[in-house]
Image (cartoon, rainbow over all chains, first blue to last red; front, side, top):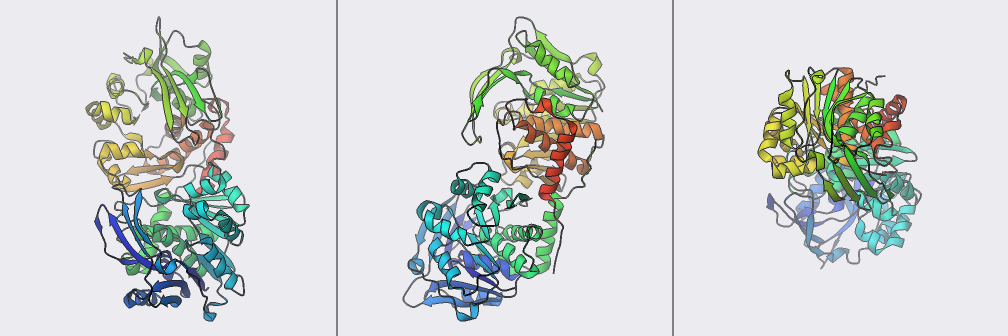
Length: 308
Length: 308
């Protein structure tokens, strides 16, 4: 099925205990579309860059089958730029620079050729922009997923609530789920958030895995404990891309299939963090990915030997 | 199989956002033995209390089939007393009072009738005491598990390393595993710790589950996300008790069976935190426990539908 991704395409400069990068390709739509590209053959993005953005970076997306017709190149403007530095244990990151640039007044324009998309993934953006993408589509996609962060919970709560009321799946981390719902218990938080609109909720817990909720059902997906985490940038977006790409490929939107989709997303995130930026994500082959998915399957597999 | 448990039997006074208790029965050996009692029919403890310790509390242990011949009642002395207060989100606890009392100079004495025990669980105690228990047993138990905490890593590191070299399974939380090994990555930490002696390592991650390591094998056990966590006191000890009780009952010491044992331990911990102190642990029946174990099984179960 066709998958439309809205989000940033940007420059990142990253510093971790293992080294630092110059300006490299980053942004939510970049990570989401690259991760999705291994599963979905019809992936397109809506985003914007400045005229400083290298053609090779756009070519990189195209090489992965990502349609960039909706990636506006704005003459005379500069691309979004984020720079961050991770703590020694990688569990904290300090933002050094955020230059919105072309995203300061970003108004997404959906090309006609994108109409009729079946799945929509709204990467982390101002909720008003996320809403604008939904409203520009003549037919509501069969599945709309949205990712957000604490900044929008703090600063545009009513826009965010409106956006959340229009979607099917929300992805959010555990601290944000608690903040958004005012509930510490994650099952309670999940119930409150689902009452705001989405039928499905994914609570991301980083190195502690992810929880999927829908109605009274709950699924726990582990994260693979890794020997080497090199750069956590983009892990959540790679997760979302693998998740949506898997659903788009398998074309089954239900709780059972979402379990597999979460494992696929977790596998993509585990690759992402193994090198700087998108370096690992652009050099995978599908057999690596299925081997990694098998590792996840093995990690939680046991024979239930209930005794009495 | 027979299971010997060494650890504190004590008074606790607990304050959580949901209320507070007077002095109630607590201590590692209490929680471990109560949790184990639902699986193992031959459970005995070695510990000490002062003459202030109510007979009813000892009777409570006996009612659960726990042999207390090795529970010394010291005339003229007072029982160990711990008091703590949990933060609003239960993720942090402040120790208000620690009175070692009878544990100030505790020298465990193993009754003759305890000789020949097949399994030994050393609850959190000074490593020198844990070593003394092992050394008093004429025959080395077939399985020795040890629990410890950051206090002993900080204060008696060489005793702790000696104790760890004598055991088969170490249980420890993630922060302590990182501290003990000097490695942030848990798989790397696990390798270093196993090289200190134990064939198996369980890294407890609280509300994020637990990891079991042995050689190159790794298993991830989830924690059940709970709507109501009332009092986390004793959760780690209930986990250890369920784990060792399950192994003692099923009499199979290998990686595969330890997966089930970890789920059993996780189930006991999930009951423990549902009420104050031991209140939930003393009122279970085995069908509740197997129903809870089934919830864990369902939580992670999915059909692996690898695609290509």
